[in-house]
Length: 107
Figure 1 (cartoon, one colour):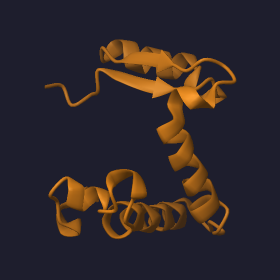
Figure 2 (cartoon, one colour; figure 1 turned 90 degrees about the horizontal axis):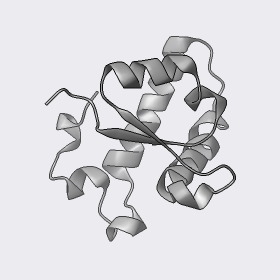
Figure 3 (spheres, one colour; figure 1 turned 120 degrees about the horizontal axis):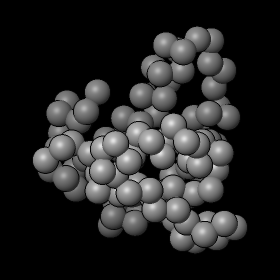
Figure 4 (tube, one colour; figure 1 turned 90 degrees about the vertical axis):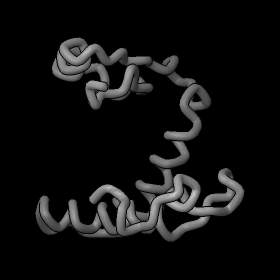
């Protein structure tokens, strides 16, 4: 296994239509699967995550440096995956559903 996904589902945002991302994906055999323009329902799960991340993390904090942003985003990620129950999963945390303890989650 190469460590890369077979495909990545992306929207039409400028960060996802760049030549650099296209070249990175091509070099690694990763297919970029674009959602249809103006159709957020094509990628509803990530749209939901993006909305929560924007509201609960990006809009809730001032980032004083790149390391401060990384620390605050990582705290939010750990809370989202290790502490917060998810109704779409039947109310366990994602970590619990995967049988991982928070201590073994990726850093």
